[in-house]
Image 1 (cartoon, rainbow, N blue to C red):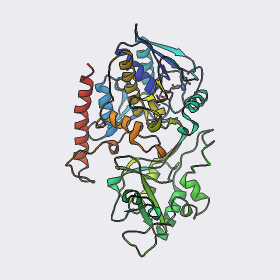
Image 2 (image 1 turned 120 degrees about the vertical axis):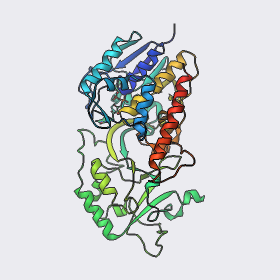
Image 3 (image 1 turned 60 degrees about the vertical axis):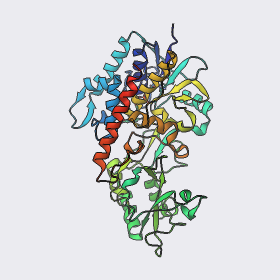
Image 4 (image 1 turned 180 degrees about the horizontal axis):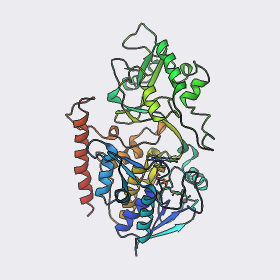
Length: 447
Ligand SMILES: Cc1cc2nc3c(=O)[nH]c(=O)nc-3n(C[C@H](O)[C@H](O)[C@H](O)COP(=O)(O)OP(=O)(O)OC[C@H]3O[C@@H](n4cnc5c(N)ncnc54)[C@H](O)[C@@H]3O)c2cc1C
């Protein structure tokens, strides 16, 4: 008899992981704490409950990275995609669903599967024996959070994200911006030119501060602010404390010389720091924010050099439990210090329903392969699933690691294609064609 796979958390990731492993012939027990123990966001006892929006975002598998992830999950017989298809609502190019019918469908499919049992109750420790997947999500119960922090070290488990917006490097106007580290610090030229800098005149700075004040903001949930205010104030809160606060904080102009206009000292400078090893993504340093998405796009385009910036993701601050995966997980999604335990879903530092379910799909297949004594590697970084898993298990900068959506900035470039705005359509098509071929080969090798 083969070993049972235990999965903690029956959300997007846990349900998908169970489905994948069970379909490969492995017995699975899902441990789900709801409805016995509640969270502030979930409303029901259903598995795979959508806690906020009812959208799985773009369904375009040719021109959109999340659409490509849909394609890969469908190709891998994913439960979350099948349920979404079954309960799809009209929403243009997006995949939106009837949330209650969707979650009820997932719950019914899991309950009807002969290889899956659901046990209701909280798990609050990391077991030493057995094969486990922890997929407890952004609202991991506090007792379990404590146990994880004890195992990983408190500085490797975050309870809030503080996401600064991330832009595609090739959408920054380099006729305005320049590369330089403050005071040219660093041993190598690469380090001395590690940051992208965007200069502001006094008038531009004043207009920017006004726009921050006027922008629409999201309210915090009850209890959400506790513990985060010390280290990472939203920029609009900093600006409220005084018009000059940002100029003495993240926008200070010292130690920098505008390469395009060396004689004139900028009044303020916005810095962007590399966000991945490929160098395709940059985050705006210190710009975590609670501005609404529409407002962010408008306000950040006022920054000289970012007028046409394309955002891989916008900023935010949320209650969100996640691991510093680049240091803690191996390329099989196992906790390095306790390899009988895998993590999956949002708690690994991906962001969103689709990304979380995709990481569940992978973890389920990897755990099943281990139990069945088969070898399985993760798909190549040229696929959407592979790009995400490579990012969280090593491609991302560990020091500044924050949750990430899937986006084309995570993909290695296709050689010989035009960069910049003009070549984008052909580039994205080349990425998605390549991914579909490679992902299909990955699946075929398992059959
Ligand atoms: C307030 C809020 C709003 C969000 N809005 C969106 C949105 O609009 N769109 C989007 O794409 N993403 C959104 N997200 C992110 C979203 O939560 C994830 O995308 C997705 O649900 C994560 O999937 P998951 O399986 O990792 O976690 P979840 O779907 O949250 O599943 C985790 C499961 O683990 C259970 N659990 C937790 N601790 C334990 C324990 N100790 N023992 C047993 N069970 C446990 C939970 O009850 C839950 O069922 C939001 C998150 C939050 C907190």
